[in-house]
Length: 286
Image (cartoon, rainbow, N blue to C red):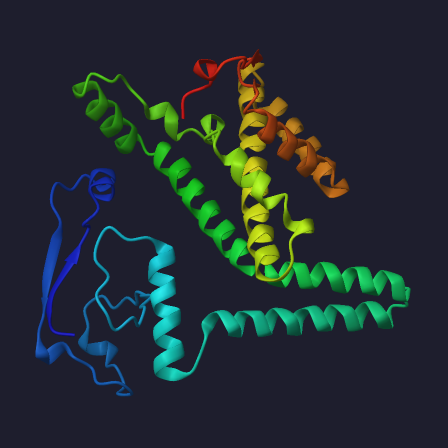
């Protein structure tokens, strides 16, 4: 590729490194290495490899856009142009993995009734692959916000920006313990709850919605747990003990249920302030 190469285009990254403007360099035709040709490292000053992820979409996607739109365009082009479906490939691999687990359980002597139950739940898991992909995105997004909130340069930038806008500092919004979901998400939870009553494609869609919403409420419950640790003034030892206890309860399956319930009912009870929400105007800010 010949042209200009830009670097440090993110203002947050520049502030973290103490740089005030993006850097750039020129890529000339003499720098091009044809595909398959050996790279002569002794001709380079400080060689480094940087992986890049590329999406073949063959058409322009106008901004604003979403991750789902980019993935849908990629899926469509791969099916039409190459007869290959990335999603179908993932489903096939998931079925293959599930079959291997079932075979292992059968060899281990698991009763036929137990094998049938496991097969049913594994089929449900395969149908919820889109939800699992969205959950991965949610985890990366939330972790990114938390990490941004811990950057001193980012906190100073946010406080300075919002102080100039007369809205007051909102750097606390990047703390995980303040993670809060909109109350309209309850409607999505109700729709997902229709999974046992539906069938076919509608059941799969409802199951994926239920999986994503349940995970979001689990995250909110974890944020509530973190806020309670801060509210009681737990030190390092207290925090470690709290998370150790949470880990033990997670192994038993109790903690995820309790956290999801707490996240769900936070729409009715403000657990962070131990206050019941009798009116919509008493809701915590989103």
